[in-house]
Image 1 (cartoon, rainbow, N blue to C red):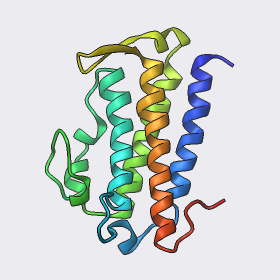
Image 2: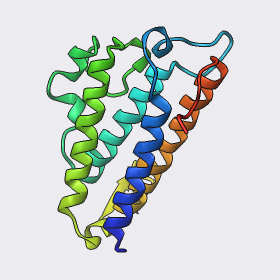
Image 3: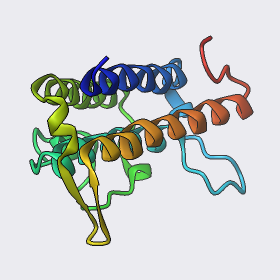
Length: 167
């Protein structure tokens, strides 16, 4: 298996975990926060995860505008465009949230389908502190980050009395 195929396989697994954790979430469960907790709602965590993938793949790796900055996504989420949005203020419309996720996933898939292993070696500036390869950015920001948030969502569902993961 080559590097791009490995990235695709890992991304598919991470998306399965995130979507599995998010499955069955609706209504007030999207916005519920726990008394005394420092963690956000399931909806805000999910939106943050999706926006992070969008940022990493579109802006950081490819140098393109984030998808969320076009297509009226902020407006559809009832938010004003912002560099560092407060996702807890979003309109938690499940249809819009799911559509955004599928748009981001499709764009990431299109990127991965357009590159070669050599493209994974592209050096990415990491906030002026270091450079890392595109493969590292995908591993850190997309794979590890989304997996971590899938775990947070599953744990929150569990303490709410819901099944955390569907398997």
